[in-house]
Length: 91
Image (cartoon, rainbow, N blue to C red):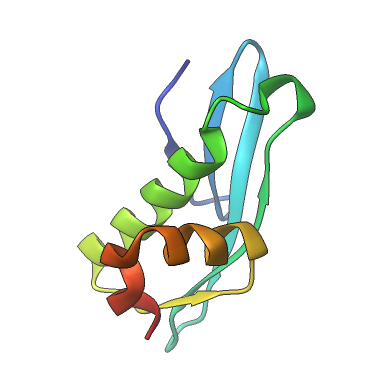
């Protein structure tokens, strides 16, 4: 399994395993926060914690870049609720 990468051209964080790619799509406005929009993990990769790895990588990226975070993805919203160390990014 590969690490999470930031595919800036496609505006998504990606992780690949067993020939399948999961991703977390985002958008960054010129003057606004990074909006974490949608997480998708192929059925073949479900249950391996890859969605959580994508969410963590995106939130860690936002923190390192000094970006505020808007979350419209329900999966990432629940991830932040389960990991309060990221609440300061979305508040």
